[in-house]
Image (cartoon, rainbow, N blue to C red; front, side):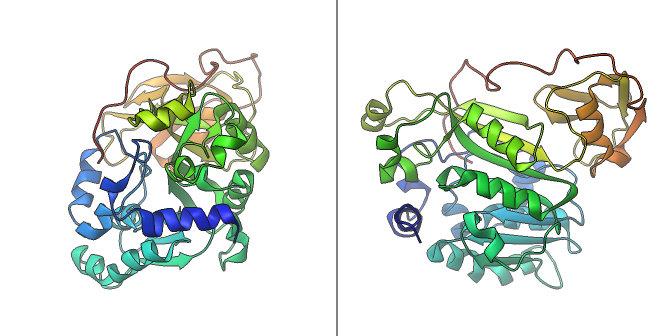
Length: 349
């Protein structure tokens, strides 16, 4: 295990005993969870919630019966939320390298099985490094969804994490995860600071490097579902970081053959049927694709495939094909994909 991995393990296993020990707001979920997630949180053991260090909401829609992998599962909070949403017939696997965090997650398996009213547990935890997923007994193309909450930034080989995630996903599956990103590349000096790294700041990827990594791994068209500026709220650390801006971002990355790097126009359209649980009136695929129920909307070829070749297909009607190309699709582009204005709201969930 590298020095950096040992520092992270020590930081999350010994330095931090709960969310109150965090020195910045980076590892802090600043958005209020939707109602069904808040309901699921009520069933989570207090110790599990107290040792949560995530930065976003990593639980997507339409999970019933799915098989989920959580990279850097920590005390197990997101695993136990997902376990309720996949149901008894679904399953969740959590991977973490910190023994103290795993111990918390594992000792509450029976508690949650009973709290959920299940006949048997549908969650298991493995000790491992998310940069070495190929060393674990995980079958390729065996997971519907991979989630991760403010952990990929702690990895030293982020491209390997993404490549392994792609390998483990089923065709049509997705990686849905939150992390911290920066508006520029971070210096080696700042990356060497164990506190800045442990607080999910100096390990943050420059957003454009992340997009290149994601595409290299096979995730051709990364989509942002939510982003908010990160306020560090620590004068000493802010002075060290200078003018670097940070963002807490949730991405969804689909494993779909045929996606193109640019959004192309094939004259296609879709109609949302209003049948996704919790999204009866409208469904948000990402931060710029809102589908009101019953309304036919034009879409680019990539969006068409993200709905047609994934678990969302039964909830849409599809119009058109790929036989005629009309050029670039206007309305899906942009430069830096995160919001520039506003401050993150205080408080963690």
